[in-house]
Length: 282
Image (cartoon, rainbow, N blue to C red; front, side, top):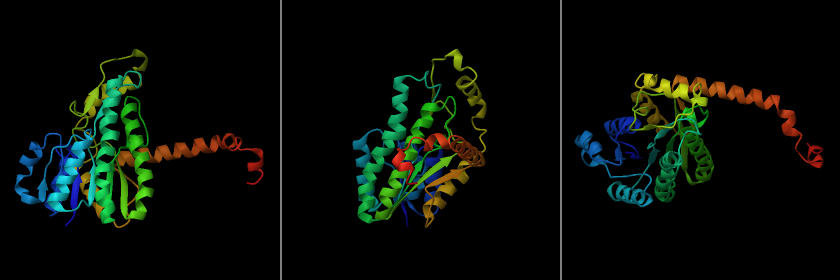
């Protein structure tokens, strides 16, 4: 029986993942800022569910939730860093407060929880960390620059941890969903900046105008997405990066092709910057 630790379990992917993991008989530490919603929705699963309060931006609260998990279940086998938030607006339109708020949750919050869980996994010499990124962690888009930058940070941290933790028997996977029919585009998860600069009307402004029409009409199915994350957790040799959704896969292919073309075009410039003695040895 696997023990899961899931952040942001009250909504979206976190809630659906909690449901599926409980239904298959595993134990779940389902955390949320307001855990009452989790406790009420999954009350029928008895002592296989622990729902502590956790604001991921509070490092002490993260340690307390992990201590409670170990006291209740003795182990943490899978950590799912799912809690996140977004901000919509051009980079210049985004206030310092909004900028920092998104980083506090998506980057520093993820780091708080990961630092709290890793001593448990290192003692076990086993475990799997699933860090929720986004296609926006590989390809940024106008209007979502600040949000995407947090997911780029998650990708960098995850790639480094993948190599740091592999010798200790701990796996790391970055999950990169495309657009899924969760509530991420609702105002409760996605803050839209009030400052509007007309020069960005055809870029970030156009995205801002389009977002309401996208909400709850996204191509991705959260039920299937959660099942895919379970499959990743069960895999003996999971990937470092896993794309979810046809839109994500297409965007990934497009970005890779662009990178290849750009690198080939500017290869001579790249090679021209080595010291002469280095180039002569190549």
